[in-house]
Image: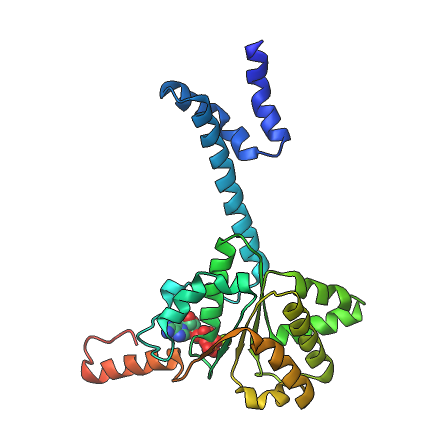
Length: 264
Ligand code: ADP
Ligand code: MG
């Protein structure tokens, strides 16, 4: 009788979709017998293995889904090189309270100062906490809009961009949007605002120039800004491009010590 149940265990786990538990059943059972684990210790151990492999799979899937242009973490951000970013503020954001509060994060500044880096690094935290994130830049908005219009999928596109836990709108203002593109962006901002779902937005344009971002429509621009900024953390990054700064530093070291800087 007991043999029957023993044979059934792996099968039942697999049928229940607990594939990791099914795969590891034999070895964990052996370890349990050898170490004289209690039954609940054995069960807890096996189910924890299942849970952590599921979380791992979800994270891999969610990372793929996010469409990041590159992967960066907060640990990779050099705060010393960027004194206009307050590390305490980034630390507060990394608690992900903004997610629960539906608070937007707006990163402003010239190219290369770390806006996208910080946006991605925060989004990685959100994925690690088990939620879905989608990264889209202004150019993608334009492309997706054209595709969706062509295939009659526009309502679905808007629904999808509205449902995701965190949306990153990158490089808003780099590209002049057409009226239709500006409209789509506006709808996304409104719907997410109403659903208390946050956006991380990066832009090189000061708020005063946002009429230009919204196809020259100052009314739409100020309505969008109202919603975007109602609950938000704004981070104004100043300074030179990080890459240029690195290059310049490399150049400087060549002048000071030409023998040692052969790699710049
Ligand atoms: P942008 O502000 O234009 O979005 P990015 O965030 O893409 O700039 O930064 C450009 C590159 O420089 C990226 O590879 C990014 O990781 C790096 N970078 C920018 N600022 C920093 C920083 N303070 N510390 C480390 N890397 C940085
Ligand atoms: Mg960027």
